[in-house]
Image (cartoon, rainbow, N blue to C red; front, side, top):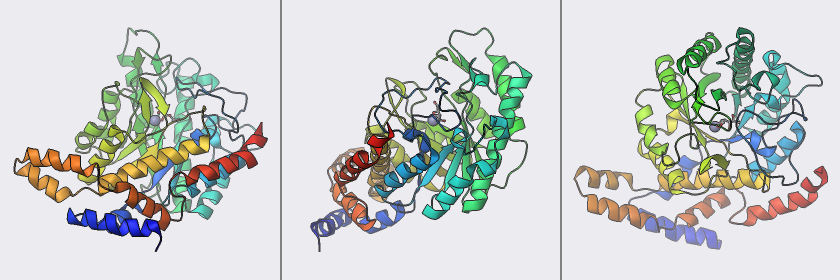
Length: 418
Ligand code: RNT
Ligand code: ZN
């Protein structure tokens, strides 16, 4: 027996004393897919036009060498990232990651432009999620897309979103697992608008057109993502939280909550049990805002743990799709995926290792002292040992060993990309 296995046996006993079954927690964890966002691999560039910069009020800062320049490079990087993460996970793809020899207009994208991704996903057992790209485009340069005043521009983006849902459904059909197609648009004003209503009416109308066609939920699920502000849309964002909450409830769409899209002291963990009373399912963009929606790599913060605790305690995992959303160009991009996803899984595991029935009983009986004492004791239980054992079981690197592989890849592959 290896040291990790020996330690695990002890940890397992320690948890069992508290009524927690670590084996069961690990088998639950193994079934939870995380959707890795392709855009961490190339600073949200995409392959449509290498010259075109990122727009839409989001930004990846830094110039760490070795970003992926082609779909083949991105898939190669993703393969490494996935090999460092225990479990079987999904890929979250944006429309600008299409593959084509000639320029394809956004409103003319077709499933065939994503055939390479399907092939790769099938071969590697990844489900795929999808996103229309309503930014980094001349018709989005004035800051408006689905809520644009001009019918022509608005229709262009409606067509793009309709085409995107079809591509989501194509992934769902081909891979046997529904794609979550998430609509996020940057629309908003830098300075105080006079009319806050008209753009919202236009957005509502556009979305109804986008979603007019029924698509089998076994193939595609629609989600909408709100935001508080962006760079250049500091004063007003059309698709605010209230807007999309109402939209998702009335249309029974998935609501996407991005951890970085609220006021800095506002957390999404407390929103989950409220919105779950009204929307069918939830999409999470697990991210980390630092002072603002800065999309930092997810670390093992209190809020990350609180989010996962809510999903487990509220039994929402079956109705929640967990996706990541951050983009850091100042450090190794593959490490970003590995660190952020491993942290997301670690916090899920911590939540799965809670003696829930004891905690609930204490709370229901009004024993708040006991509840506090137990919650605090749990923090120093040998969770790390259970995690290491999980990595061993899933045949992925244990501890810092994942960085050795990244360093090696950096020397062998990434440096040659400059
Ligand atoms: C932007 C949103 C959105 C994007 C991706 C690239 O603020 O969070 O989800 O990050 O679509
Ligand atoms: Zn997001």
